[in-house]
Amino acid sequence: MFSKSTRPRSIASQLVLLFTPAAACLLFLALAVLYWIVVRHAFEEDNAGLADKFAAVRADLIATGQPDRLSEELGSLRAGEHASYWVRVLDSLGNTVAETPGMRQLLPPANFPEAMSGLSLKTRDYRKENGLFSLVTTTAEAGGQSYVIQVAQDRSADERFRKEFATLLATVLVIGIIASIVLAITVTKRGLRPLQEMTQSLIRTGPTHLQERIAPAGWPRELQPLAIAFDEMLDRLEDSFRRLSQFSADLAHELRTPIANIRGTAEVTLTRDRPIDEYKEVIASTVAECERLSGIVENLLFLARAEAAEGHIQRTTFAGKAAIENIAAIYEAIAEEKRVILNCSGESDVYADPMLFGRAVSNLVENALRFTPPGGTIQISLAADAAQARVSVADNGCGIAPEHLPHVFDRFYRADSSRSSEGAGLGLALVKSIVDLHGGAAAVESEANRNTLVTLTFPKLSKI
Picture (cartoon, rainbow, N blue to C red):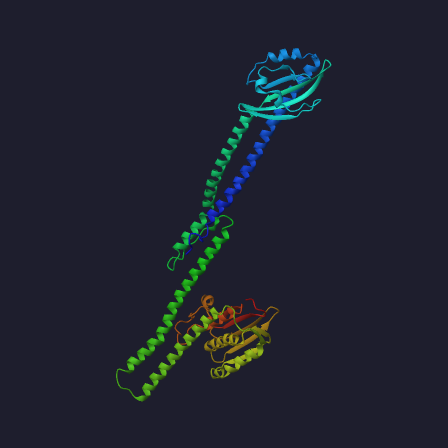
């Protein structure tokens, strides 16, 4: 269990934590650019208006050459804080010769910047309790006299607009961040909904409920491979459980028959006293059934070890011809007794575990001997190409019906169930496990009442 400090964050919380700062950052940058453009545009318009006013006053002064007339014009303006522009004209001695009414109390001459000659403008911002002003000073020659012109522009309305606009953008930013969080949570929950559906499917899945499936067609493209893999996993689990159930039933049947035979024979024998020869026969029959049980257990253990080997087998390259000839020599006596001819042909190197290779081919030969009638022939052939070696065992025995061919490599499967005393149906299953362990393949071809051909393929290089 994870403690609160070490518990990993959910995907949803991580996506929200990543998306929200990113959206907030982009929104902040966009609003900052908008604020800069609007404020700069207003500032440039104010400067242009101030420059026009300044140029007009200077032109009037130069044109008339009489500051008194300018004073009359300024005196006619509405005095007070509501004026947009204030104008003052000073002589060379610093005396005021003309000014907008009320300007001295609001904007004393000392607050203005130093005078600049010509049309050059040097603006200074001056802030008072009742507003913000832009101040500019220059000189002009009129009527042979030198004058200083001071012009002030009231920018209090622009300052209020700038603050209100900044407040508005800050409010939009806060609302945008909140909206980003809500949107991120909504989108994340919607995007992760398929994972919740998969979780519910996993919860419902069990040994008795393996038919659960997901429809990947409606999933996002990134999650479709996960849905497909999930369905394929359930297919494999369902098949494995089905085969395991069938295997358990078959195993119980196979073990029940010899145990029932042993118990029945013993119970009949104990009903009365019998001659020693009959006791010997009972003991011999019990030994035979025990040997059969031992063979079943040994084969099952071999299958379990083969499946758990995970490819850790001792492969080596050896002469295939010598290996199949040795196997044929082992079964030569049995073949002669059954009047069956054993032939070997072909030559190739085989890359495999020699013991497992011999076990697989021996099972095929033993199986062929069981179902080949007297006078028949069993052919063990070896062939190869650049990539693989093939060993085939062919016989002209009773063959296998087409409906049984897909199942001959299944455990405990027998084409003729009435011949239960002739093997437990594990021989070909062992062969298939050995070939799979080597990364090869096993195939069977047969025609009923004519022949059977089983081919094993061993890669010359390991595929595992």
